[in-house]
Length: 190
Image (cartoon, rainbow, N blue to C red):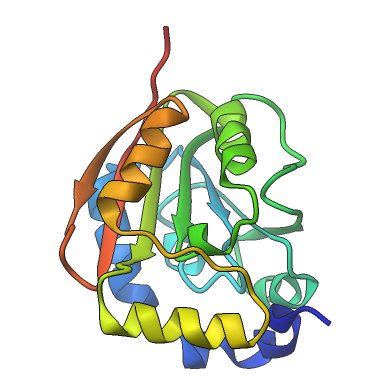
């Protein structure tokens, strides 16, 4: 059984900080009420729930059925089970895509970024929050996740920025040297 299916009932309690994450992402993202938002790898919807009432259309997508079952209890949020590498959405449908502490769980980041490019509207924005690989809590998390059989890849901000740039994104880094950093930007359109 998938680890996230097992911990879904208690995930929001063992993973605090959703309100602070929401506040930072909301500030960076210049959100509008009419935005169509995807929380990719959004699990139980712990961050997406804070967008209810602030944007009209919110979807959480996650590969864990257990996490999505918990997500369904949040009013105003649509919840979809799907791997990030093959999303069931139309081209150019989302104004904003957030990926909160999920990048390190994706098996094929290149495929995920191709999907993000495909479903993001022209001029749309992607906002990432990730844990800083240089910090002791990130190192401890990686050790624990590896012991649990996960293949997590934790990045420092500049390395993740480089991955995005190589995949056709123009991104800006925020809070680069803190425990959690952010990348925000969009697809370079020719």
